[in-house]
Image (cartoon, rainbow over all chains, first blue to last red; front, side, top):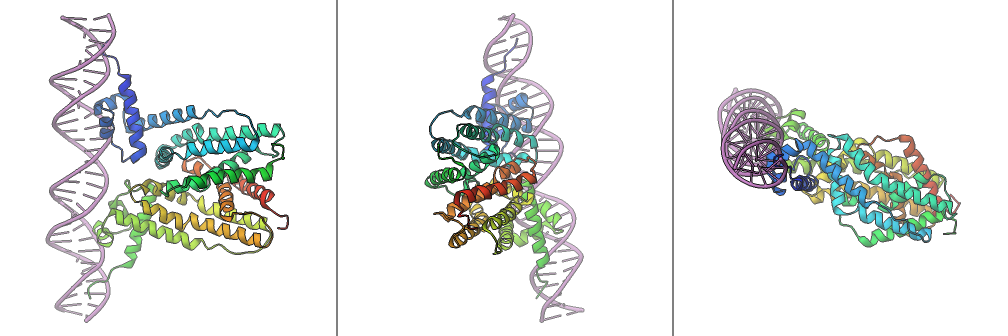
Length: 201
Length: 201
DNA sequence: GACAAAGTGAACGGCTCCGTTCAATTAAAC
DNA sequence: GTTTAATTGAACGGAGCCGTTCACTTTGTC
């Protein structure tokens, strides 16, 4: 009985918190500002979440969920070179979104304060992408399109080449040339196939 | 005439500032704390540097100088595989030092406020390493040990493989296995040589 | 030793924020 | 319409920090 909790406000707070935390950083973000942005009283924020650090935790969790949902990698067919190129483009498009970079920056700055947040994010995002790529490589090996020993290692090499220097450049605020990204992906796949391809793909 | 400026205090302040900024982040670091750490009065800090943001600027500049000095890459001889492995170890050892990771994290968080800092750091550090690697590759090509078209691109691929996922893991506070790093470097060189080697190295 | 500038310690005003309290208001459930 | 709980607005104490001021002490030069 009594007035029920307004779930809409609950979500609005988390969303406003996510925006604030990963735009300004944990310490710069203010509960007052988040409450105002969510169209809610500061007291309501405290009633819902208890405090700043709990709120940050929830914001990260929610973001990880979103990442997890979007990371359903399609299993399409075609020559292995094509599949890898597709994967590379999907991966870079996803990881290099400005909001994702900002999220990573903000999270890294808070990891010392709350170490498990970093591990959670890594497992929800990059680790899953990496596993998906390793799986893709293993299936190609089963088909005789590739030859290698360690799929995990190959996935790490390939994924790293897809990113190149670009993620660092983005963190340092250096503008990115999309053409170079496309050429890098293509070149990385070529290099990888020269080393590990069988010519069957 | 009068009392001369104490250069020792000047340096002590910059060093304390560097420590504070890249351990706690710009906004968390306090002038009061930096002054205390440097064994100096707060007023002295203001007299020397004028304010917090100027002090941060100087701290970054000093760090970039240090990086530049240490980045003199030896030109030693030997088979190309050996040289690349050496480079990989030197590079990862340098870039994966906890203090360097912390520096990068702290800097990324401040780039929005002061964009040129990021560009300066990138030019002083990663860019120089990248150029050194590209030069190494080109000389090996001249000797007929390698074949490729774009040295810059190859350097980016190789450098990225050397780092792998590890720099992200470090930023996310995940413990690093040094053995895996060594195996990754070795594996990356092998992969690169299978793709671009001539067998002459 | 006189002088001049560097450096100190303490205090101040101003600002922002956290987290709490409390009376008053709103909105749904019964 | 009464009950119950969510929500609000405003205010508070406490904390930390910035940047400045000022009287005072130190330390070197002339």
